[in-house]
Structure formats: structure tokens, C-alpha cells
Image (cartoon, rainbow, N blue to C red; front, side):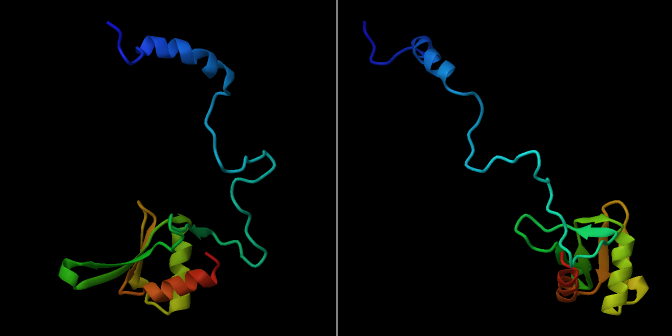
Length: 132
């Protein structure tokens, strides 16, 4: 009895010469990166060298989040994605935002900076002034 479809073995035999002529690998619509190009963008001239860096999120926002804990009675601002010396960032926040030193802490395990109170707008403004 004849069937209206080809078996997988027949298809493999028919397609093998075609596969051998095609180049292996994946195709991409992005441009190829040459070896001379750097992997990360270099800092601009007006950006100073700080001992810390705050990476942006995947949606290109600053990683500054207001948090409410203990039923909403504990209000905090969390800064994530800090690379480098988070204590230097803590000192800059205390200096520029006129905060009390005990209001700003650093979680050494996650490298997050925690500020007492909701200061998201002030922190984002400072980070933008520092070209993050």
C-alpha cells in the first residue's frame, strides 16, 4: 500500500546533500563585532572615575526601588546593581542628599544600598547627575 507521506529516513536521505552545501551555524541580523571593537563602551570625558558603578536595568531604568515593609510602616529605598565600592556610594548619598549616616546602610552580601524613607526621586536625580 502506498502512503501519501515520506518516511523520516527518506526525507533525511533527500535533505542530506542540501545540508552539506549550506554553511553551518546560526544566522543573525546584527552586525558582526570585530576584534578591535571594545566589549563595553568607554566612559565619556565628562564622566569622572568613581570607585563604584550603578548598572541600568534591562529596560534602561535606574535600579532604585521604594519598599514598604512591616505592613507599610517601614519605608525604605533600595539601590540595586551596584558594582564596586558600595560604601563610597553610601558616603556620596549622605553628602549630597543631606542624610543622617545611620539612615543609609549597605548589605555586604548583595551589595545593595538601603536608605531609610522613600527617596527614589532624589536618588535618581543624583545618579543622573553622576552620569549613570
